[in-house]
Length: 131
Image 1 (tube, one colour):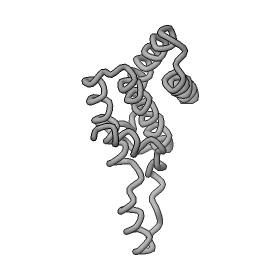
Image 2 (cartoon, rainbow, N blue to C red):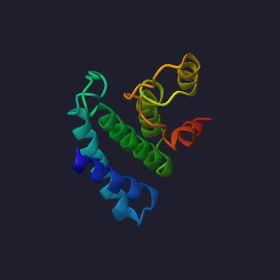
Image 3 (cartoon, helix red, strand yellow):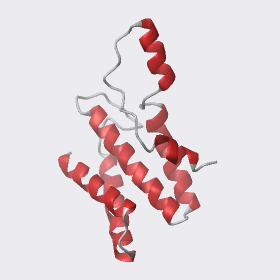
């Protein structure tokens, strides 16, 4: 899992600060390998099996899909953007931080679930690209 997190961090760095066509090709290779590795994680859709590492696995998948979405915007690849943002919405809506859910929980004074992903700083900027 640590190896995948390091690769995801490397991907994010390449996507946010590209150093030319060679870095774009490297980012695409890393992205392809990460997406293949994500298929093997049991806590991700469609199985969504709960485990002690489920939140960590889902955060990793969300980070990878955010990087893929940013890359597709930079490449102006609309079909890839649509695919990536659709996959990403699962992590924002199903597993992600929900303001209304948190408000309802706090009003009822219920404990907050630990299986919830922390809010991503890219959530609203990426969803805003669909406007």
